[in-house]
Length: 446
Image (cartoon, rainbow, N blue to C red; front, side, top):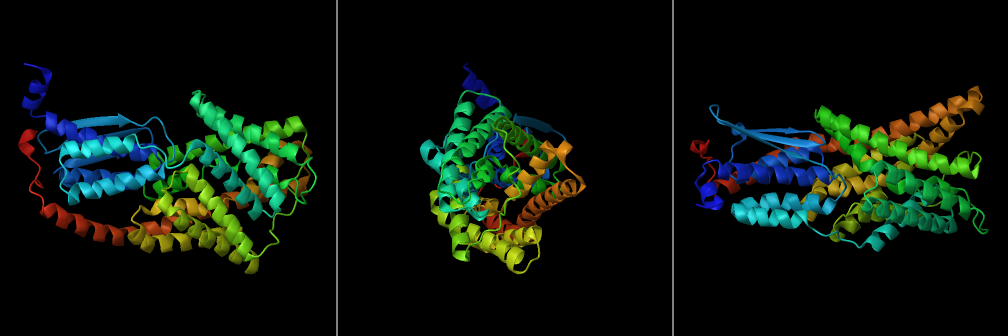
């Protein structure tokens, strides 16, 4: 008797297979930057498709491990899955969401579901490496334009950031430590940006230094960490936050090293209030949003949606910050909330998870200038007088509040709308499950 025959006669075989498929679903979501609430909801939906009732299902999720248990009170089976390679891939998140619904709608078999899941696991990126590098450069160029640079400085920033991104990609291929890769790429981009200020022609020669390494800014991990903490997934949220701090620290180390080697004087005091029209804001925001979308592998069909979201978020922020003079944090909070509220309705038309369109849309609002001012102040803290020290502290507070405001602005509408959306989705899949013949889980297999 071969192994397959033994497994087919084993009453635990089918249950174990279901658990492994549910775990693999959660693993793909976690490793591609889905928030923990989405991972939990999707895993429960897949379990329902497989006939496992919610009362029997227990899920525990951390940033590095997903554990699942089913129990009927008398018997219990537990399995876990490690999550090792973390990145950002919005196409996979969107594909998993669609698969979990189609599995119920089309009454997939386990074999069909597994085949579809494996295809998602090996799904190629929407964009080539060269295109992503160009997108990363344009994203930083858009940032620089939002900081008030001229178009020539925009061009210099894009080139430096693209090269820095290529270096980071090459380091990752060599399996160099992820944080070391960040430090190396930020160092290279900053050195190149420093060299461009010797080229005549730009009226804002120092601005590329402010934006050339912002393709590394961990905006999505940070927003997910706040989202997890607000959803009471404390362990996962704290781990994401620590990972974010390590990424920012690595990025800062590379920038600081470059600044010290080049003996750059304090360039962060220059004016970063853009003397432009809302039309220019819109172009820069759209470029930045689309650029980051290529890094995050947002589906091509959604690029125009993300660009529009970026325009709305940035213009809302600038109106409240500059025209109403209510401050950067308040403007960023409002911009993130407006986009998030619009996305609640928009997801029904574009058929994608909410975070796939909201997160790339709000990334252009990250307060890079204030982060640089804080970092530069900490580097030269021994040379600062009391007034300068207060200004450094103020920059740190503004940067922290703004980042927190963006994260909360994205999360709060989603949290408040979740009950409404959950009721609609639950009603939908309960109707679908009633059409299936195997909605009752066979507890005798336990």
